[in-house]
Image 1 (spheres, rainbow, N blue to C red):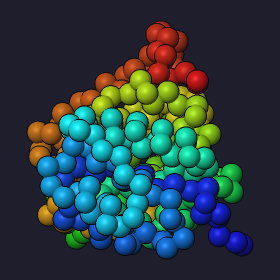
Image 2 (cartoon, rainbow, N blue to C red):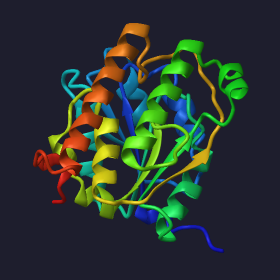
Image 3 (cartoon, helix red, strand yellow):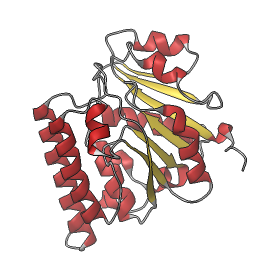
Length: 251
């Protein structure tokens, strides 16, 4: 089986104060992937300079607009440049980008519309990889709830490595989503509301000391969990037709 055509694949990296890890993240990408855009969301460090030194496309926000706002900029740029698949990868070197082409291939073969990297194969592996016990428990709790409500069977709803088909991104009204970390969960709920096919593949856990693209504190994680529960409630109201929520409808 031949490899997917890399000219149809774009890699989008949202980055905020990621100077310590951005270059390592870029260097781990498969060499075939040359269409790369970094969105620097108002960093105060050398994130933009490192992106320029690695000869990738760069979008800069003059101020920090938020993780969701970065994604809106990145997806629009990739789609405007003819992407057939867009891979979103966090800049913090927590996720293994060597599987990016495999994720793209699952989409190009027509098996999935969205593919997530799954860090949670076993509890022991997750904890040995540096995931804290409270973060692991929150992940397990919320992922199980989301699987039940959204009708999925995924291992990790909170992954920072994701691949989307252009078809999916053109159907989903992501411009209605939050500018904060709730964006990812909103987008997944929208995809499920539209009946898009979501899959996942295993990736190793490698938590480090850089939390530039992560929710770093316990209270931030709890707030993120509350936002996720709100999204699920809105999804249920929409699916039960008690409310007509525009963001869950197709473009």
